Image 1 (cartoon, rainbow, N blue to C red):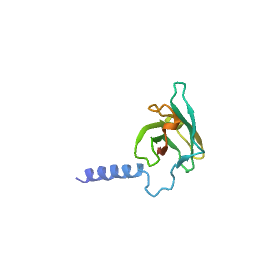
Image 2: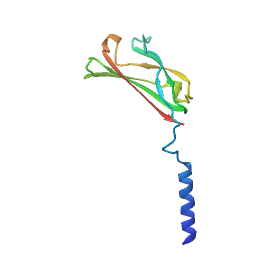
Image 3: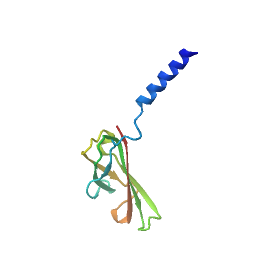
Image 4: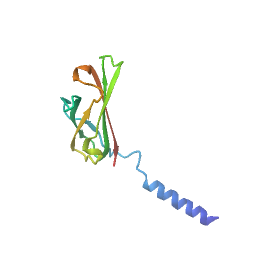
Length: 125
């Protein structure tokens, strides 16, 4: 019985040692760097070019920028969602800027979009 307890305790110690501390201050923090620039794609769809910058102190990866587009300023009618992937989902080290492009495929002009929200998500290395 003591051998099983020893194995259990050893496994528990390995699991705990491999976990990140919830008190660790190392974290990535991605924010928009500058303004989004609106252009049109060659097939007549609104495209938004922009950049994020990692202002944190850890590497980010699998970053996704979601631009939710609305036809009214009150944001009651969602008309499209444009998604960009800075660094092609790769690593964005602390202090690094990464560009992205996001296309609103269901719109035919920038004038249709009266309001927009931006959501940036990522994972920490």
